[in-house]
Length: 82
Image (cartoon, rainbow, N blue to C red):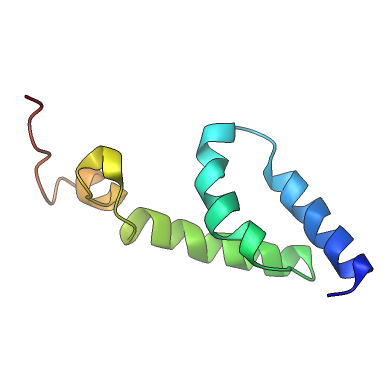
C-alpha cells in the first residue's frame, strides 16, 4: 500500500473513532483496521456489511453467545444469572 493510501485509510478510520468509543471498538478492530479502504464510499460499504454481520451473525459473549438479533427479537431466551 502506498503512503498516500495508508494516510487516507487512517483518516477514514479516525472519522469512525468519533462518537461512542465502546460501540466502535469491535467494528474498528474487526473490520476497519483490517482493510485499506481507498475511498469513503468503500469504507461505508465495508462498515455497513460488518454492522449487518455484527447484529445478525456474530455471537456476543455477554449475551450467552447469542446474536444481537436473537436477543432483540427474542428468538432464544437468555440464561438466568445464578
